[in-house]
Image (tube, rainbow, N blue to C red; front, top):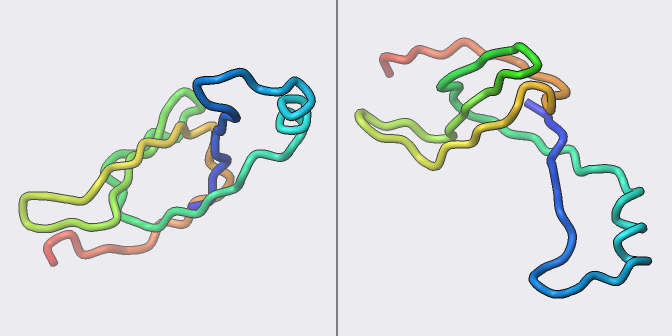
Length: 82
């Protein structure tokens, strides 16, 4: 899946206004994620939830991405029993 990442600029202090304007006009990063789909609602208000590792009763960290931020998605067949 490729998706548009939301991003922010700055930390707890003040941000220089020229730096903020430069950040504001830059393209947002396009990310790529590969993993197991735990949930997917393709509606614009929906989201996809994925993990990259699944065990018997547990999984690794879970990523939730709004459907409206998804650029492309390719679903591959998966044997959930293995």
